[in-house]
Length: 156
Ligand SMILES: Nc1ncnc2c1ncn2[C@@H]1O[C@H](COP(=O)(O)OP(=O)(O)OP(=O)(O)O)[C@@H](O)[C@H]1O
Ligand SMILES: [Mg+2]
Image (cartoon, rainbow, N blue to C red; front, side, top):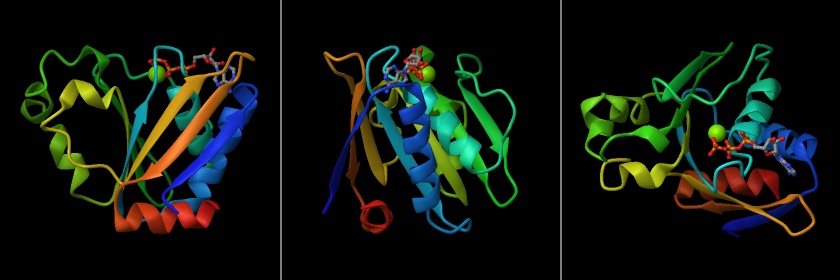
């Protein structure tokens, strides 16, 4: 099994899926990388907010428009939330030192991964969010690594 699909009727359901994802994450010593794919307003930041709530973060979760990265220090791990929409060129990803975050323990969620094609490491999951004609969202979680498949099995 390498893809799971969810239909989310409203914002609360998207945060709820974030909670399920938080429970399926590997141990805090692992490096886990999720690409979030979807149009403007698809619900990518909402999903990250759900993960952060489940991991005990109670503060504000906003879109990291500048400086493109928000890092949250949680009780047992760091969560790095990237939004690369305003990255000037794909190479700017490496110039900013962002690649360093993908080889140390922590969880990385990346909005607009295509803006760093060729520089962003390969993800464990690709999560794709699409608006439905009923006003909700369809979400596919696709595993792209052995670690990603293992975590997806935790959710099934
Ligand atoms: N399942 C859902 N059904 C309907 N609306 C939703 C759902 N999930 C989130 N939303 C709404 O979608 C809107 C945009 O959400 P969000 O900011 O998370 O999008 P985004 O994908 O991060 O956008 P951007 O690319 O601009 O950063 C919010 O108003 C949120 O309430
Ligand atoms: Mg966003």
